Length: 213
Length: 213
DNA sequence: TTGTCAACTGACTGTTCAGTTGGTAAGGAG
DNA sequence: CTCCTTACCAACTGAACAGTCAGTTGACAA
Image (cartoon, each protein chain N blue to C red):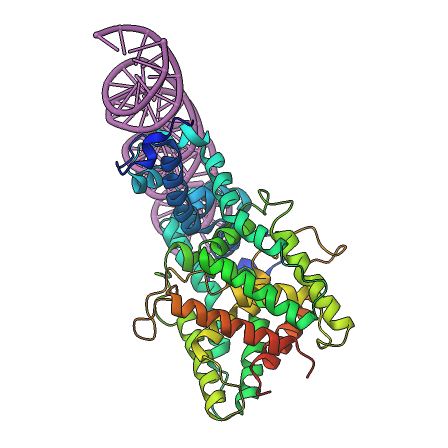
């Protein structure tokens, strides 16, 4: 049996390694999303958690280790979801809709991810992605668009350029969503209703935008 | 007469206040675009210019002063161009196309602007914009879409959400454009040909996306 | 020639940050 | 109870950074 029997009981767990790591990761995710790697402060992350700053170095070695861990955790869900989509045998427009819905669902669940990805792309030239991740997401979308154009379902568009623009239309919403306050009275961008509406609106815009007229 | 008579001659100007300021601003624009305000290093900016770091403080008081100056210079062109557009008396679809073309032309001329705006929105919650700028750009677009929906030219869409998504489709391209290297053989995202293609592709996607089917 | 002022510099300073260290104490095993 | 491992922390260190300052250089006017 695992030595974690205490956790099953109702006693509030102090001295819980896993919980502490999770708390640090969550706080770090917020900090890295808002400030990027360099401008993120380890002391600010520690302050949010309530544990000492040295715990970051205890569990994650250094700032970069923590950053990698945040990136990995954030991406795991997204990559997994999109890889098990099985789009090959579907009509291009249906495949595109499924792809976008999966992407937007994923991102709605973790709205900080696009901002982190943005920082990663701009600041670090994506050196922590390189393989496996957002690159392959883009590649999937490009292939999808190419197929749609060739089969005449989509209009004549450049698959590469359009893939970028489509990603932009989907993800831009989340960037700065946490920040903007002055809005049409009291609508929080990240409320469940607004996220669902955004999913609908984005899909509608893109599907209409690529379809053969 | 101004005491700048030397400038008209062909002698290479050293000790030229305006030129030095311009050089600093350009270098700062690059640094701030890549790293954002906090992570940008004044020493890195100075290193790019060839002049001493203290010139930043001599001309711009401090790091924030330099940042403000960069923001102002970057925005001046954009705001001016979009304000003199006179879209009211045009049909909504034509007005939208004009708006997008002006926006994309502007941004193509200064591709670092979207990245700077992004950093500003995420890191600093847009506190250096607040009035007059990107807010009013968004507002213009929202109004445009609203008009198009009411007159039946555009399909039933949410003007607010769609405005965000449209901006994303247009601007996402520029974010990370300087950074991504692995591409369909040797295409630089910011070459003139690619920028023109992006303008066309983005406009086509959006116009098709909003039109009544 | 000399005086003066703006443009400019490199060496300095105080602070803030990532990362370290020496140690405390919880809690299970024997 | 004692021992040992592991979670945890406050106080520290050295480096990097924003910002300063005392002084130099170049241009022009008197």
